Image (tube, rainbow, N blue to C red; front, top):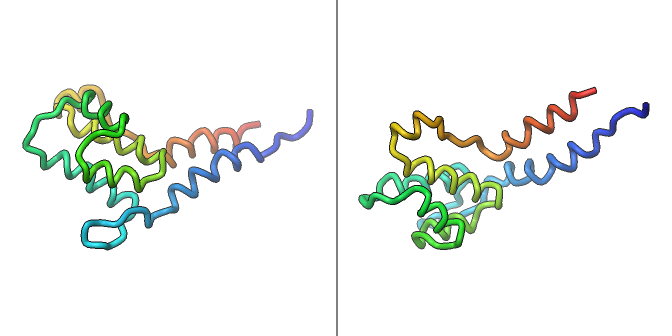
Length: 126
């Protein structure tokens, strides 16, 4: 049997790693550059500080369709796609009732870690 090639895991991993390393993605209102983490924190802070009680699923769908608050839409547009998905999933979690979130264990893993697990499994198998 021929040896296994490691090309597939590297090809799979490279775009995600590039997205994860791209830490100068958005610009705040003051003109300073924000990291991916800071951008997501600003998005989540918007919802945490909101006085309006929003339905988590409805708001997530609205964001997926390109709707939502202007500031949140602007910040989402600065993120790589995998991080947009993570940010929207995190908004869903933030908007959930705390007891429900705890009961469901609704906390979301960042995209580079999600990809790293199968990549490592593939590269360390056989």
